[in-house]
Length: 102
Image 1 (cartoon, rainbow, N blue to C red):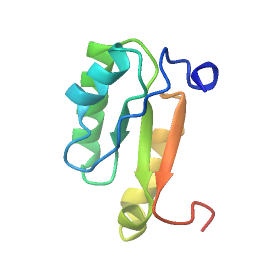
Image 2 (tube, helix red, strand yellow):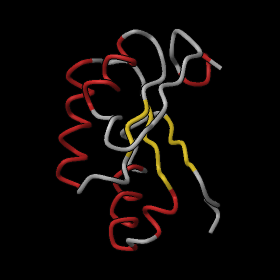
Image 3 (tube, rainbow, N blue to C red):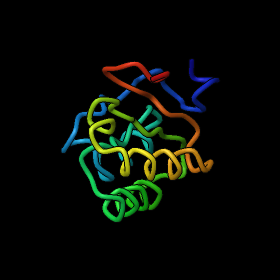
């Protein structure tokens, strides 16, 4: 798994809404684990700010987490987050609680 994620340790930080912000994700990533930045509970400007905090704390890989039902309730935000997340800024994306193929 570490070869796939590019991390030192096979430890994933849970992408809990309102907690999985830049400081925590950056610390986990800097320590060699898989930090996951949640995307559902923030507006895009705050999400970019939190992403920048992670990058300031670590140059190691981390991921973005898409909570499917939360984003599906907001189609415009979902589209914006997906465009932003899929532009190559992160090594991987995780999804939770729902069908990503919908």
